[in-house]
Image 1 (cartoon, rainbow, N blue to C red):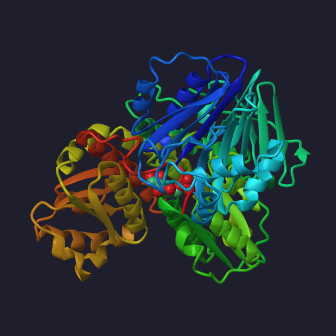
Image 2: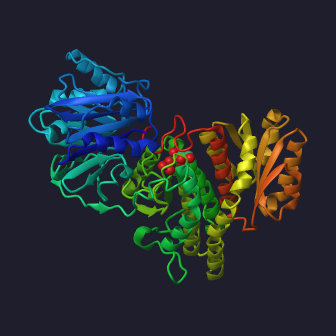
Length: 607
Ligand code: F6R
């Protein structure tokens, strides 16, 4: 989704910092971009649809003369991707320029009113009203003005504003869209996310909803929703540029896939102590005697991690656990109350549907636990309890390492709750832990099969469709494998419980139709064998992902990727690594922009 960067400092390098920041924010997904700087007592705006290169090209002969500016990458919602609809937007008097991430739900009503006042609009966006309102309401101080503007806005927003008449300051605010402040020496920044400013500072202030900040080169003042100045903690970011860079890999996605063994180990080290016990310290404070049911709520890949998590909770902790998609859950009027624990999973911690589902759950009295990868994110701050995944920054739009970190953490959570629940005794506690301790090594082994997997992707790249089948928890793993393939290779894929195919979809199977069959569950191998036979009889080309010992599955399949005989409960997590690599190499073979697939955004901050 949209990305914001702003700089005010003692060096004339606003354009350089902004273009560099926009480059770092590209991973969020965008279709146009722009910047505004103050120079010679006026605001200069440049904006272009398409890639950042277009903007850089446009600016290549422009001399760097500015100490202050804001920039934006836009992911179109209201109005097509065009130069006019790109941000920043001017007020009519060209006094202010604004950038906005989010959606102003009542913009049509405000726009009509502003047009009546004589205001003219240059874009179709919802965002432009903010510039006109700011200019219309400007009295004599920015805080009073922005409070008046905020009174009018409904929806979600992170906003950055520069003002020609106050050329030494950036004004910003947020509500349900991310915005952070980078605090440097004689330079300060606003940004949608940490990578945009990490080159300049690791000191960050996380703005809370409805807070406002005024940044000058040597000061940052934060105000609450009543306009009263408040003190905010400065948090030190504990990861560096190296973690947010490709480090020699051709794509972030491959780098992130390969980081997974060490991320599993880091998760285990973080959440177990030297006595071999799971330790969530004070992060977790669940009164299990009150909890009758657990919901897991998330979107996309995080939802798929939740499916694995629910399997752990049912099988290990013997707790009833339902999983729902956040955009459905939030409107489903679920029967939840103070006896429900709702676990929200989100890599970014900013997914709007997940955030809103959490707010709704809290309003019904449920206990909320966030599992997120981003320190200080909206979801982390809104939840009653937070467990952080320790995956480090995930830059590739397609989520890989965050999923594995989420699954590992959910596994630990299930053992922890199972012990609390009195169903996991000391012996099984340690044998469950022994299983997860093998995960990292098993992922390592499957990563060594990259070349084999690459060969299979050579076959898939020319196909228009593929089906993923599995039974039981494997069918949930298929959902993630299918999503990964479609989002980065643009091949149409669908995931099915294997037994369901013959209830309709088998009609689509013809000579050479690819079937990716996941078979990792001992009690399902025979059934999977029958399903594979049915499909092969109709000409399907079956690629099995299975354990080495299931030789009957291997023999009947056209191609296969095998892994060691790891325990069933964690085997789909190993199979998933093969599915990630399969998707990755297929996308590479097709020449797709792997890290930034079309139409997608890393952080989905609109509904
Ligand atoms: C797919 C992918 C998305 C995200 C989803 C939720 O590869 O990355 O499906 O998983 O948008 O995002 P978070 O986890 O940030 O809430």
